[in-house]
Image (tube, rainbow, N blue to C red; front, side, top):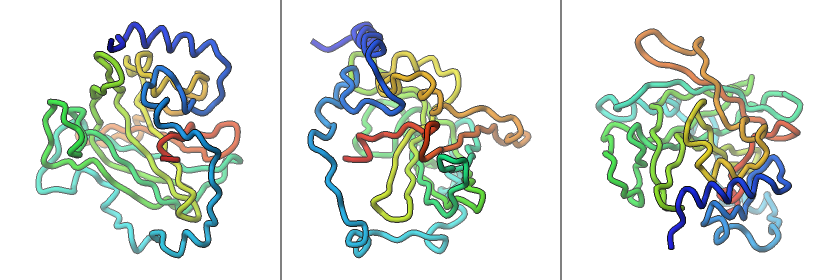
Length: 247
């Protein structure tokens, strides 16, 4: 029998009583597919120099400035709340990480991805693809203009809904140094019901995934703004989608 939201809530509450760390549990029972998808063998070390012989190469010449604006990629204007998301990529000592490739992908304002596997009955937006990328500046800064994504249903359990979020991918000095995470929006009522968000059982670490509204980033009659820093190492490291990163 399919689990209900009440079943998932009880499992989330039980899991919260168990010891946990700042990173998501890769075999978190309320997140049903994590049991099937998480790695069951130790990580296999790869020689980064050999991988780089055939891995993609990225740099300023490969990433156009307008790729960071997800609202101008089509002939028309996308539907939804126009927002700016910006912040800095930092190491564990607070130093900026420059020349970092940052990629984002997200659902549209109706909560639907531009992907053939997303078949839930929300409208596509012909003027919004939902992908973008940029290179961090000397101060580690990144900046995207986009549309605030909507929540969407998923089939983890009966009546399961994901909070609105944007996926972030970052590459380090070589192609094997990729990390993936998600940014959420403040005050979302779906947080308590979402087993992916709740798979980080430490509340302070979960909070690191939530962007802060910043009125200084708004443009009159044009966009609102959110600020979110990404910390790659140390005690304030941003929680990562380890399952996706290793898949």
